[in-house]
Amino acid sequence: MAAEVAKRAEERRAGGGAGSRGRPRDPAIEAAILDATIRLLASAGVEGTSVDKVASDAGTSKVTVYTRFRSKSELIGAALARLQIGDLPAPTGDPENDLVALLAAMRRQYAEVGGMSIIGTCLTAEAQSGEFLDIVRASTLHPRRAAFAGIVRHAIETGEFRPGTDVERTVSLIIGAFYADYLAGVEMGEDWDRSVVKAVLDGARSSS
Image (cartoon, rainbow, N blue to C red; front, side, top):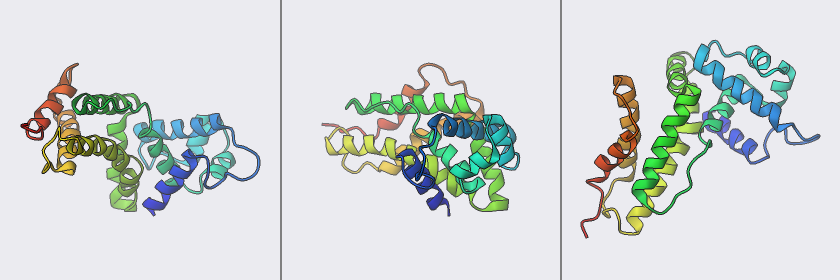
């Protein structure tokens, strides 16, 4: 279910998928719907996010929402997928700087849209629905991790990181530091992103 929701969100971003036939859709309306969904998820949770409220907040109709999204789950999946594509910095070839830039972009985006609140509300809804955590994973967490992992793998291939470097563990340490420090109330200043990446990469860099 979650994989199918994420797949349809990806198709929609690429210009295909459900609702692509007939008269072209106004991308501004879809953007307004998805932005309204993100705001409601952050402020009211999954339970408080209804198609009626999304339509009202987006300044459109319930029918318009349903012509684009078949269900509330698909709507939430599309909104979460929208989060992971925002302003991702292009790789420069310097693994440390690229990882720092990705981590900083992640923190900035979470702050702008209430990302932690959205994850929290999906975790809360998981006990009842059994699907929203999978939707979060498929729509935003896995694609975001893939961006970090791509940089680490490239650094291993070019010899900048040790051949035995555990890619997934390295990514978890970098991203996990954000979640851990956020929950602990640790102040994350201007140099926080670089300090985390440096600490993690100390064991990954090639000694040659």
